[in-house]
Length: 86
Image (tube, rainbow, N blue to C red; front, side, top):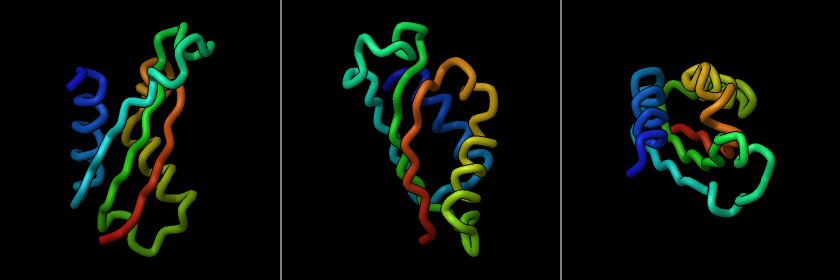
């Protein structure tokens, strides 16, 4: 598994204590894309956490973005999020 996925996993685990977490690197699907040329990866995150209970989808996405912090500036160019509760 690549280092960037491990960083994403560590940050999401620390912030959201997920029951389930899957991270897919979709960067190969975007070869030649401007973000890919600058080094930013494309990822899909499937995360299940009690931290999302009672929150609308947009609020759940904000929690994920907040947990990833500065990674959203360079390491991650695009992120597809599927966030749900147990």
